[in-house]
Amino acid sequence: NNNDEKIWAILAETQIANKLNKEALESLKRGKEINPQMSELHFAESSIYLTEKSYIKAKKAIKKGLKIQPDNATAIFQLGNIYLIELKYNEAIKMFTEAIDLKKDFWQALNNIGLSYFELDEFELSKKYFERALSFEKNAEPLLGLAASIQNEDQKRAISLTKEALYLDPKYVSKKYREEQLWGKKIQKATNKLFTIKELKKDINFAKQYLN
Image (tube, rainbow, N blue to C red; front, side, top):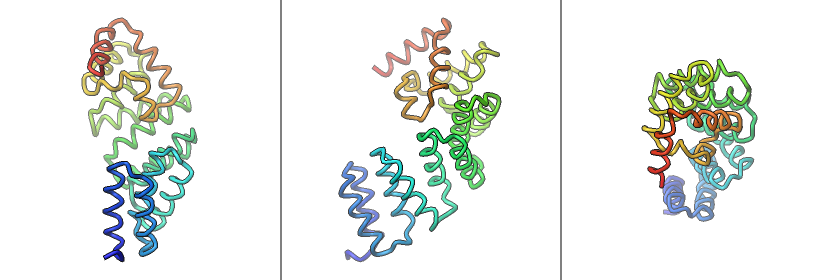
């Protein structure tokens, strides 16, 4: 049955999982020809464009999907991430806030608001949102983000938060990995400064060894 858009969607998911993006886009196209009102097809298309760093196309696909399914918190969050990549921090914050309105415990969106505010030099708001993210999930990313934010005023707590973050996820010792998680230049610079604290040397070396 090649007239069932759901089968085309499943095929596209399998192709995406096997990194067959060109084939997946063709499957999604076939699915949309059958049923252009299936939002999942547009969201899947946007995920492909995101991996290919075709952000304009990804944004267009997400917006099409949101016209059909406007209450999809994950899609709104992904749109916020694209604005974050584009350094459009206020637009990103707006999208992340919409996602949180739909899903109160969306800690990733809270965390990314913290990242956005840091790049806008709104450090008190940045700290507030990292704290809110941590109230839902004790995750390495908001732990390290908060540590970078408070290091000048409360170094002792910043050290403790950093140790915990690197224990939970040593990958955050890597600048490249943090960049993949959409950390901006200012919070990267602050994290580099944080990592010069001598009390963290052992933990940083351990995290690097774990990665290697």
